[in-house]
Length: 285
Ligand code: AMP
Image (cartoon, rainbow, N blue to C red; front, side, top):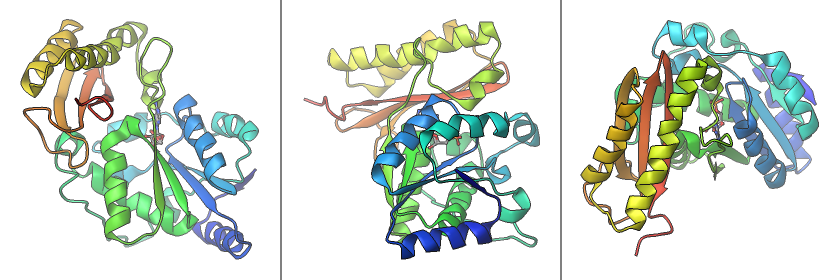
């Protein structure tokens, strides 16, 4: 496992791999790795001849400096976790490497960035799309894996890849959860024991919504009301949204007649958690 810190070295390594006819599979992360990230890397292992994992906390996608400063960083531990996974390269560029002096070009995936987290975190998806395009240009992957934990992010990257003719296959990976249902997230370490317990309501309410859907409920409003009620009972600090959106366009729907996602973003303490579930991808009658 080789650690690369500069974009130049990364590009040279990628071009050599391509000359040797190797397929590069890429997993971009912000570190503080957990089983969710590792599941993506295992998929990458199957999809490519060599695997590159990046660890880069991207300042451009944070809406407050406090959130950026508090984001967990544990590179030493991350490298230890990666060692048994047969990763060829861990790419750990510095901020100065990624955003060189005078940097001013941004990628805006306009419609898909509008709703959900895009509405509540202005500039977030522009930061995500910009850094992912830059990392793609440095790593030159054939395939890249993104988790559906960040469903909107995955859709934004798919659209950007298509719109800009990047020719990279984007693979979606399912959400990995703790045994009690909490979606794994680097941010979970910021939760107090009490907040963590209350946060279980997110996955529980999404599961309950799926039950309603199975029982025939197709009104987005009714499902959203029930989910919101359940979440409110656990006294969240703030609810950014509970929404039902078309699984492709992420536009809000009122009647569920095609595949949708039910997505939530909720604060417990100062930690913002997101979770989602698909309704109707395999189960619309
Ligand atoms: P992050 O380090 O949070 O930026 O995430 C890096 C990648 O890991 C993204 O594609 C995320 O969607 C994915 N990821 C994060 N948490 C999970 C999870 N619990 N299950 C599956 N993928 C995840």
